[in-house]
Image 1: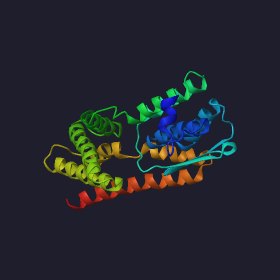
Image 2 (image 1 turned 180 degrees about the horizontal axis):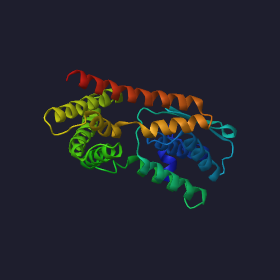
Image 3 (image 1 turned 120 degrees about the horizontal axis):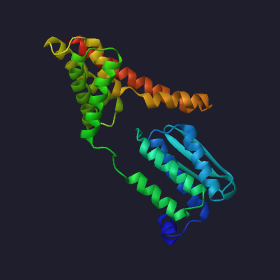
Image 4 (image 1 turned 90 degrees about the vertical axis):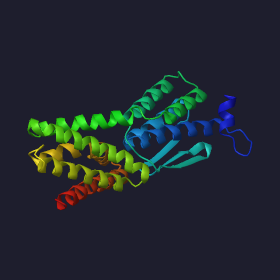
Length: 261
């Protein structure tokens, strides 16, 4: 436990068990919220971890942009600001599995914190190339699902892959999610229009629909509805606004590409 204490020391003083538990709960909540978990799951996981370490007076308040965790009878309150959010359900699953081990008493606080740090610091599960190929394949499949023609699978495949590549590239240039989705949608629209003009594709609308599906904020919409049904209105409305902004960016990007036709 010495390394765990030392890693959380303030002004050279070791922190007590309540601070250790709070740090574990905050790290678990942060990982969950940053990687696509719904608000209820984040709060429930944090409270369960606290109870597993014999802290029964823990309270958590989670919004899409921040987490507040307090242990009332120990005078401990922590706040963490969430500035980056994405979707990585592998990390969500890993934290859930870890919380079950903690509940079973299989991990000490030091071991739990170390494993959480490993989860947090782990890189992308899939390479950029694999993400692009997956988006391209999904675009072709979506086109067929919407009763598109087999001859349009290739244009949808290319447009979907380029759209995903554009999302990754533009997100590196700026951390504004709206901009990357907007620019990617323009690329998809232009490729779809070009494919129809050159005779490679035939149904413009279905090519576009299939190619933009990987950009649709499905997880955000699902979590927004789940949060509102659970009574987390602040988080639900915030996520709904975020999903709406993404849909707006995609729609405006496609409209602009079509207007250039």
